[in-house]
Image 1 (cartoon, rainbow, N blue to C red):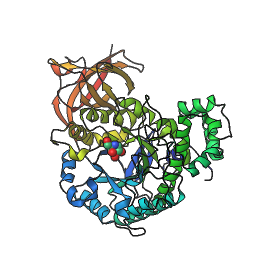
Image 2: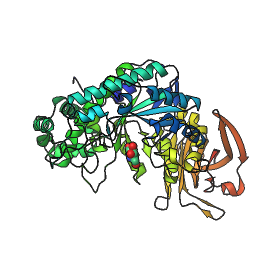
Image 3: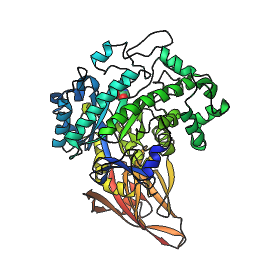
Image 4: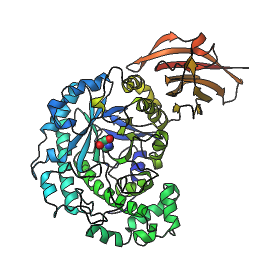
Length: 535
Ligand code: DGJ
């Protein structure tokens, strides 16, 4: 590897392009203020996605009824697995009929696709590798765990494995380019799925032991030194606690611990995925990313896949894998806001390929999009959701789909806020459009809101557009002028193709007799509010 830069992708994005030279028609990432947007057919695109069960996309007939269910829930994008075993069932013989069928079906229902490359790893394991790879365990070596066992998991230190995976992935991207470069149904690619060693903090195969005994590669340490002040706090603290050395073995530089094993594995998985991503981008430079099975503070690396792009090793991944445009969390854990924050470290754009599909997920999408400028969200297992017409997620996406042009216009400019309220966190304050907004849980006609959620956008001078449920807003002026703030008007609103269509004028009980901008806990709606100043 030549010169590495932790922030190479971020720098390229700041210049308005990804790490790869772009054909302007290829879906790509572009900066708008502090946000990173996905550009499709020349326009920003907000992914309102859902990920399928792992085996659903392996059969076109099985999928036939699924597409309509997706549009009934107002999804605009489906995340679907494409596996190495089905694409290259015999070495060197590719079969893309399934890929083509998925793309054609998505087009018929006006849906976009993000493909998940189930290549060398899926949830840490290697169950999706072709049988010819599984059987040839000498050419494609396995990890070895502390007890000497060699589970069905490819070692990331096997050069033949990454070469074979990269070759298949390159062929896939070449094919997608031929089939889809004009229509752009396929928007992005996830490279592998939740990589990392399970059952041990690192690979203990002979090649892994040899690499672990060597010095930490110079480019990595130079990179860390260059970006020392901005490193993720855990990594910085670990390095400094061991003396902030600029050379030495992994244990000399980071100390002897399972966390150092994780850093070593992160470097090796990231190098592997970078080679796979580079092979794909050489043919078709779609945005690419890796996803993460998140860690748990009560456990150690190895209980979660050790070496995956966890927050504490994001800097290692960024240094080793410049061909990955971002790193993503699969958020099933309760502290959703905190995980979102962690995954915006060092300008990493937030995209959530997996999260809960239930009512909490339907609320959380407002936070990810409103507060963290997410490229998109995608709850998991959406094809088995019952009663799709009533699903809270479908209702959230209906509102967000209407507002998408407004959201995209205001991303990255400090003009939008998203929030989640509950009994423990009943109120937040945020500054937008020259005002401080105090957003609190609300109740209306005896229907108490225990949960509030939504987003607010400063859409014009003294004008705000909001969406959500169960909250009220009080305004305080933050610019020179008359001291007090009154509510001018509040209107229910719908958006059709980005144009605002007013509904009821909300006054009286609905705005607390002119005192507050309110969103009933019984509905999920869009409203527009104007304010004025007086003494
Ligand atoms: C996370 C994985 O990435 C998905 O493919 C799926 O296995 C889910 N876990 C199951 O909860």
